[in-house]
Amino acid sequence: MILYPAMDLIGGRIVRLRQGRFDEVTFYESTPSQALDRFAAAGAEWAHVVDLDGARAGAPAQHNLLTSLTRASSLKLQVAGGVRSADHVATLLDAGAARVVIGSLAVRDAEATSALLQRFGPERITLSLDVRLTGDIPMVATHGWQEDSGLTLWDVAARFPEARHLLLTDIGRDGMLQGPNHALLAKAVTRLPHLAVQASGGLTSLEDLAKLTTAGAILGRAMWEGRLDLAEALDAVR
Image (cartoon, rainbow, N blue to C red; front, side, top):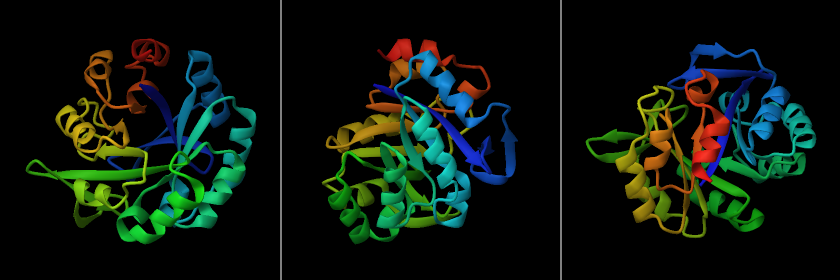
């Protein structure tokens, strides 16, 4: 399993949003470069970086910062936030990102997303789907979790047989420190065998990690609040 220590950025500062709400934000003291140095020192090989300014604007907004981070760090960066076009993907890859995350576009425009997968290759693109459970049906949400697409996780994933990476977030678990939705994640691994699933939302303990069957996991709030040590977590998944 690949563990992705994560940081969300607003105006060049590391933050945490509660349930994706920009009016419920926590700022952290570390600079992004200091955080990446700590991730590397702990033994990480990847990091997940979210440009929240870009997510809000609908286009990558912290390009200069991301470029400086990729050039200064030994880590491979998976970068998300506002990616809507081939130019956006090319700009981030040129800046040094190892993978670029495509979110809302995969729901709104399957043809354009397939074109990105073909142009840049499925190893350079991570599809990101945020789901909210209706009963036991994972419905995909868009626009900062505010809108229901009317599509299930399975509907959207079926559009992209050529894809190789999927970041799957259970909105109800994100940032809540309640543990991942293991049932949903296990079902995704079984039903989507062509995808390397990254678990996102709720990861809190080494026990949570031990239960995961996914190819990867995003480590966010629990790490930032000292509940889960990154080095210990990395040792647990090796």
